[in-house]
Structures are given as structure tokens and as C-alpha cells.
Length: 496
Ligand SMILES: Nc1ncnc2c1ncn2[C@@H]1O[C@H](COP(=O)(O)OP(=O)(O)O)[C@@H](O)[C@H]1O
Ligand SMILES: O=C(CO)[C@@H](O)[C@H](O)COP(=O)(O)O
Image (cartoon, rainbow, N blue to C red):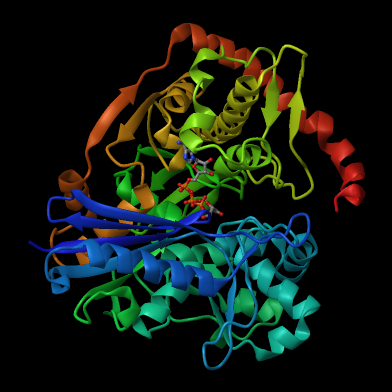
């Protein structure tokens, strides 16, 4: 028997999956990652921790594996997007990685618009200047940490750095490159125009490869893997999540609730214009793209609430009982803007709210309100896609949030769509394993691989009465952003 491994460098954890020829998950290991928030709106991780936890996870997997490790034929990666890993000439890390949910770069986003021009930026990169994207982070280091910037010779994204440490080869794939704001989407190469406008040499950008390209073999003995295991580039976690959820043709929609929350739809062409409302990035499937709306703190809002109010409890116990709370959490409304927001309100300064607090509210009401608020936020992206003419009647739901059945039912009722739960909620890791399987020649296309590997476990249908209740609540939810925006502008001076 032969196997492949999918490695997902998430924000909350590194997850590795061992998958057989039929797509069955034989074993999996998850190792938590720490997150550093030195100031409000800042979010950093230590790339060395990604490497160490990936090595440990692979070691645990290979030690439990009772066949010859050379039977593990291929490995690929999925990784949290946009995070800046600056490297010096010897490829040593220059400073901690600045992550996708770090919003310190509002000034640099304005600079990008001024230097490149808003219209040109949208025409070239198909995306707006957002704090989360990599370019503004590079410019922040250039301005605020000139010494660090002076040492930097190039940059990569989180999974690229881990892959470099496992293989000795450095590159970036198109699905992640699209999220840097430096890629010319239609021409599919680094944009000389954007680089020149912001004062970066094109040579600062790493070499580009397809997600399915082989980028060496495993040379890192600490993983326990064989040196013959082929390594494939892999992709952005949402691109890999799309592969792992079978979002490989037009008309298919994904909802992912990980640390962030994502609604994603397949696109076959690179020449569309969404005016920057939706993110428009390369897929991990050859030459395909996707559009996406992002909630910055989705699963993160729920895990924040658990860390603050129930740190000792297991997650399953903490969310137990939400199914008994009625829709609307007995008049309690939550907005998940605890780290700012992206879609539809690109706003680094907005913060979250609980509205409607009453003496009768108990903890389960709060937990349900948090889950509902996160889902309302994702529904804003679904509404945006529907308004643009997309039909969204079935959605594949993945990520840590898909572990909870009450939440999957909430998604069906709030999105007014059938929710499909797959056998494994680990879409990005499975997508990475499928990229490795395709790279090893196990299947002719990723779609063929999806037919063989992916199995639907359950469907959740919307309930007419709850759909109506949630429509009323969603209209209230949508008011909160506008009614708290100004307050938050004034409160930001107190955030320490
Ligand atoms: N049992 C559970 N029920 C509901 N949500 C969960 C459960 N376990 C974890 N989560 C949510 O899943 C999120 C992590 O999802 P995951 O897809 O692993 O994220 P990432 O890829 O960002 O590391 C957590 O922030 C948490 O809110
Ligand atoms: O910034 C984005 C997408 O643009 C995020 O979706 C990151 O890619 C992080 O993903 P998770 O850790 O939540 O999976």
C-alpha cells in the first residue's frame, strides 16, 4: 500500500493527515500553535514554531506507522495565507511572521493606493489594498523597522517556509502569491509595475510554481519520513480547502470556519471584475480561480470566548447545550469584529459587540449568540455573491466549526441553503493530500481525485420557520456595524 501526507499550517494548529490510495484517513495528528498579540490589532507567530510542530507531528505520525516509511510516496502543504516571513540572504528568518489577521498597516494600504493608483491596483492584482495582504506588511517593516528590512533579501508565506525547511528548496505557489498583492493575476507573474511603484525590486519576490509542482523531496530527518518522499508545492489554505471540499467546478460553494471564516466560490476565468468587493485569487487546481469573502475572527471569536470564560473546559463540553437555546439566543446579538473585519466592511478599527444583554441570559445563550454572529457575518458574503447573480443552494462546510452539528444546522437556517458535512472536516489538509496524490500520478485530475477521496457524511436542510426568524435577526445584525463604527473610532485610543 502507498500513502500521501497532507500538512496544514493553520493559525490555531499544525494538522497532518496520512491518507491511503482510496482517500481514507489512516491517521492524523494536530499540534497547537501559539499566537502573539503584542498590541491591539497585531498578530504574529514564530516560523520556528511552525517548523518544530510540523516536525513533531510528522514524527508522531511516522512512529505510529507500522509499514516502511518509504511507502509514504508524497506530501504537500496547505497554509494560512498572506503571512509575511522575511528572509535574509542565507534564508534565515529576519523577524516574527506578521499574520493575515494583523491590521497594523492601514497607513501602508493608503500609501499603496497613492503610489500604484487604486484603478491600476485593481486592474493588475484584481484585489484592493487590505491590511491583511502581504505587501502592506512588507512596506510596514520597510518604514518602521529599517534595520530588519535592510537584512531582508526575500519573503515567503508560512507554508513555503516550512516546505523550505523540510526540503531545502524555496518557492511560492500561485494560490498564495495571489494573496500578496504583488501578482499580476491575468499575466500570472510578479507585477513589475506594482513593485516599481512601491519601491521593491522584483528580485525580492520568490520564484513561482504551480501548487501541484514537485519541489524536491524530504531532506529533514527530524520528520521520520524517507528521503524518497516527494514534496509538492501545495497552496493557500482556502485554495486547498476548496480542493478538499470538491469545489472544482463553477457553481460550487464552500464555507470554512477555522480561525477565520470564509465563503468561497469557484471561478474558471481570470478576467472577471469584482471591483475589489470579493477577494479574487488563484485556486490550487491548475489555472482555476476563486472568489471569496472573509470574516476575520470566525472560529477565533468562539475560541476567544472560551479562553476568557471557560479556559479549563474541553471544546465539546463548552459548546454542548447550544442546540437547546432558541434561534436569536433569547435576544442576544453578537458581532464578531474582535480583531476588525474584512468582508463586507474592510475596517481595521471596528470591534465586537454583545447587544441585548438581559439578567436572564446564561452562558449557553452567549455561546449561541457568538456562533450566530459569526454565521451572520459569513451570510453577508453569501448575500454579496447572490446579489452578483450566483445561485447558492448547497454549501460544503469545513474547518473546526464543522465539528458541531448545531452550528451546521445554524448555517443551513441562516444561509437558507443545504449544508453538506464531509466525513472529515479537515478540508485544507485533505486538499493538500489530494495535491500530493495527483502529483504522484494516482489520478489524472484533481476532480478525479475528489471523486475517489471525498465522502459526504451528512446534509443539513434549512427549516422554513427558522429561516424566517433568522432573516429578521440578520437585518438587525446588519445595523450594528453602522451604529457602532463611530463609537469604535473613539474607543480605539483606549485599546491597550
Ligand atoms: N468542537 C468544536 N465545535 C465547534 N467549533 C470548534 C470545535 N473545535 C474547534 N472549533 C473551532 O474551530 C476553530 C479552529 O478551526 P481550524 O479549522 O482548525 O482552524 P485553523 O485552520 O485556523 O487552525 C477554533 O477557533 C474553534 O472556534
Ligand atoms: O486571510 C485569510 C484569507 O484571505 C485567512 O482565511 C487565512 O488564510 C487564515 O486561515 P485559517 O487559519 O482561518 O484557516
